Length: 115
Image 1 (spheres, rainbow, N blue to C red):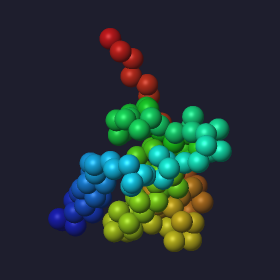
Image 2 (tube, helix red, strand yellow):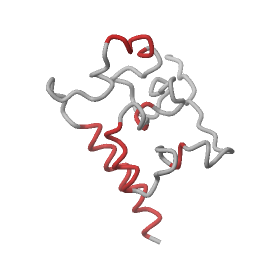
Image 3 (cartoon, rainbow, N blue to C red):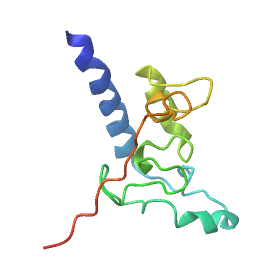
Image 4 (tube, rainbow, N blue to C red):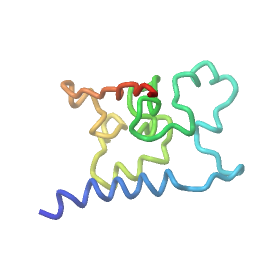
């Protein structure tokens, strides 16, 4: 029974630790280190201060939450592998692999209006 809770909890913990890491100019995340030539695709990425799980937390280039996009941030890959959520054949989290899971629906959260 506890194993059902351990895997998601471990993934949340690893992602939270990765997200809380202090930024240092000498250690840029892959998105921050993007060359100027990639600026055309930059508009497809979430702002760096986007809250996880929101409409703004979206990678338009890969159609997954930016905070979980391993193609834009390969530093996330070990967390997915640690929770056995990894498709070796396609180099993606299994939970995002549309080739292995064609019925999978990954939807962007709706925009929340300010009141």
